[in-house]
Length: 227
Ligand code: CA
Image 1 (cartoon, protein in one colour):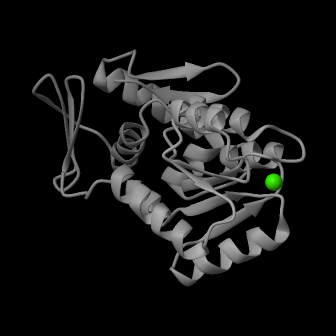
Image 2 (spheres, rainbow, N blue to C red):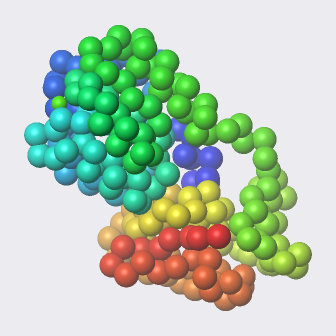
Image 3 (cartoon, protein in one colour):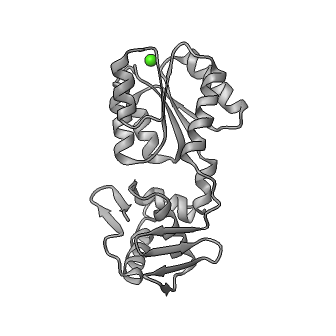
């Protein structure tokens, strides 16, 4: 797996009304998107921990949670674009939702076509063309084509896996990632007890890059890269 895998990620649909969920899902799938549907806020947070998504569509009135709290939780842990979909057409929700970082706000009833158009527009904004080959984070430069990494202008020798792991971290700056997720995304593996190899590779990256603050340990959760 490489960082390119994020492109094919699915859309997380958080909606407790089955009719609406089915309709939205059908339209999105027809447009070529993958969709994971959950009906509760708690399930949404769980899904977010275990999967990688391109975007979340979030209903504000959920049976177990206020969608705005779910939005806040998403924003606290990732840069995932959020489209709020709600029957609550209250100015205050709209303002709070957008202040929380929601990328768009769609009021029910809406046409599925309109929603798909909004989703596309948000993705265009959130995912600029990947013409940029180099990733710069502080004084670290990573070049995808040549698979080279330099720190403060000095080239660093990394193994293929170390390079993939660093590329994945740099593509997800600020996001807390569990060892399981890293193992699955970078190694393409998921097996219990296999996460020790993640720790070993992170330790090697820290040593080789000599930038101890780049990849931080988040106690009980995993790792987070910060430029
Ligand atoms: Ca609802």
